[in-house]
Image 1 (cartoon, rainbow, N blue to C red):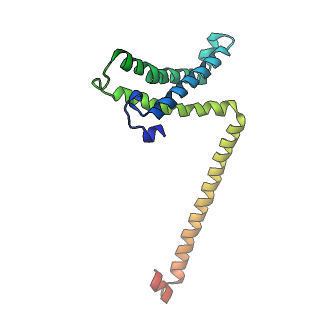
Image 2: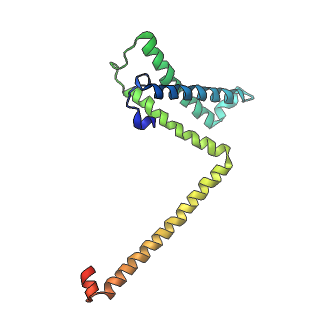
Image 3: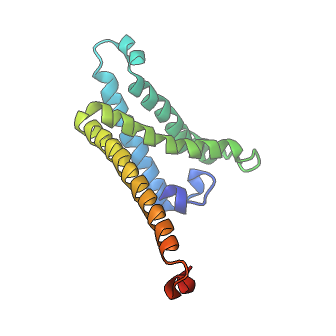
Length: 158
């Protein structure tokens, strides 16, 4: 929804609804990552968990976009429009990287992985069925073309 309807270059320029949701998401994501950080027995094990490191990097970018840029603009009166918004558009696109967190859910809930793998196998089987149907339709069209050649129906349709 944000990518489709939010036309503002920076979050502080967006409508109030987008700002409220972004701040809530940032707060809840910060709480989640903090709880997961505190769940580690040894802090050194943090860098061994790929999904935690990914979430931590995403959290840094989300906090930078949601709170740090807002503090710079509102607190110090910084005019970011003069600096160009190309870098900030990259921040905005990085929000879409949150979709990668779904891989973490597949890792934590093996039943989802079984479902996704089953869908992959079904897609292969359905592709083979569609290919066979295409070959059957193509061969039937050739046979009908040959059989109806010289008839009134053949002259009318082919």
